[in-house]
Length: 129
Image (cartoon, rainbow, N blue to C red; front, side, top):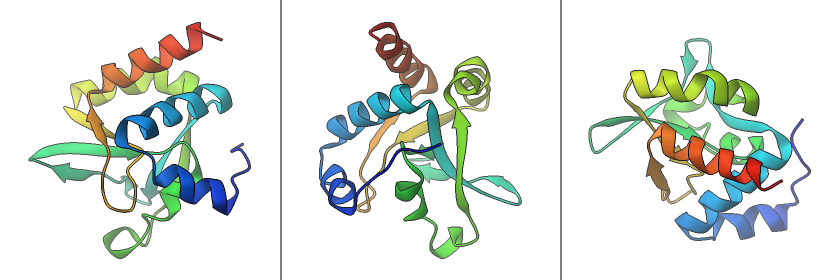
């Protein structure tokens, strides 16, 4: 279950720098146990950045829903439980040579990281709990 997100907090978070949004993503995912992306009947949506296949991820469904326009208008936010992500997704994404676009804002700005980099940040945050 996602956390409560006010409109004010939503807008303020989108104004953070790429690095700040990455850290916000890690903090919220660790606290609430979910990673959100977009999916449709055909599966998860991906995008291409500099020739690389990428999966965009967000800490809350409202951020993902904002991206469900244009080619993705048939998509809806879908969650992956953190324990499932850590046990299967990093390996699968790495094998598929898919990068992660972590918490992109509406200007399409975000950090692009390898799956193992995100896993390391998540595990480090979990260890600090």
